Length: 260
Length: 231
Image 1 (tube, rainbow over the protein chains, first blue to last red):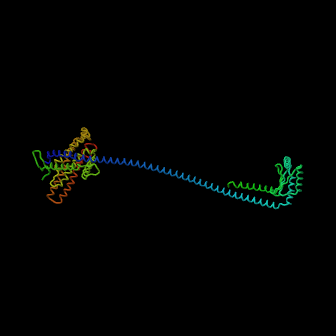
Image 2 (tube, rainbow over the protein chains, first blue to last red):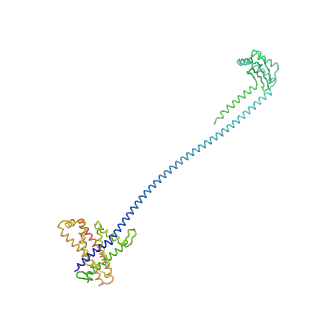
Image 3 (spheres, rainbow over the protein chains, first blue to last red):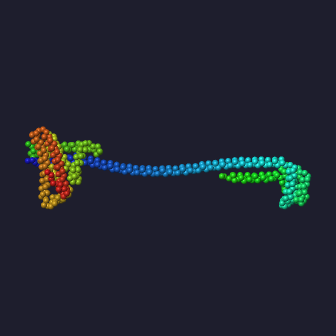
């Protein structure tokens, strides 16, 4: 008989015992270990994923901040550049203005110097010219010229207009002192008489005269009474000329002083 | 000449006896239990682990994968029974390299015991899954006429399981014994190698068939076709 039923029963028990032993010592521990490892790996992976997400987030944040910082820096730089350029413009403008002022001042100074020089040259020339003229005329003055002067004075007196004549007559009438006649040279009594006659005729009255010699009147005669005066002399002409020239000089100086 | 280790009797007291089959089986049980205990004593859940632990993990996960490929949804529930079937039959075959050893699976008593365990386990798992009524109803599928044939199939496949394993293992040992008397040198070694291969194949076939029967009992319609027994 191939089958021994006691052995069959015993082997069944043996097999069931082996199943229990294997369950207890093999499958449970190994499966538990595998499950624990898988769980642990899953946890580690989840942790890694979380860390990666966090890192990504932080990287994004950092990049964002970086970009913002770059933008701010660029804005600040451009603002600074703008300010610098405007400041530069302002400084250049200021310097140019200062230079212009300085140059204008210098020009004015130069012009002033030039005009002062011109004026002094003109004054000097004027003085010299008149001095020469006075000297020449004084040198030329003599008896014959004097005579001619007397004649001219008489004729001028006669040619006086009515208003002047009336004013002089009034002055002579009012004045208690005699009318004063001044001449550069001592004249002859005939001249005095002729003048007396001419005055009397002109003013239609007997006018008292007092004669005086005054060398500062260059070749001329002067009649003064009660603050009124009638005179003819070369010095008069000269001073009129001098006045005209001075006026001319002042006129030319005034437009030259205006800025170019 | 001995056909099976049942005939090696060490001690007998009437019906009760201790024969070679029982002794070799205890040896295998001791080997498996002590080995498992030793290796799993310092199991690591870390990334670093011992080579023996790796070996055990490979074996256990491979068995799990095979069970789930057969169509059983919760491999952890069945690995105790099916995995132990495989480990026992495979270890019994592998130990044939030890001189003086005779595989306990070469005894029809052992294979019958294993087949009986399968015969009982199949309805147990089936009833656990779909209830007593649902399980019994599966014998009437597709029609009640099929009931006797289903019952015959249940018995005959159990018989086939037992006899197939016995025949293969016994014949392997027998061939080696005969060859040793005829050509005692190289040829028996080759046949031993072939015997090892046959033993592994038989272990695989036995446990996978048990898995298929259990799966068929749990999903009668879907896996009935897969229950056709191989040669």
